[in-house]
Image 1 (cartoon, rainbow, N blue to C red):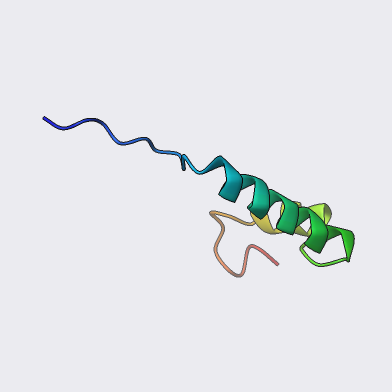
Image 2: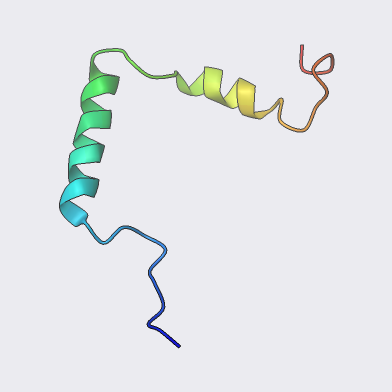
Length: 52
């Protein structure tokens, strides 16, 4: 049996760069506002006609 593979990335520098990119996008108004995301998530598991 081989060594178990981690489920998370081991490249911390790449994680830090991705976080910085995401923060920069949010600071200039890109992304989805929290309330919009929350409303969308609350529709999960519903039929399309129930979600409206």
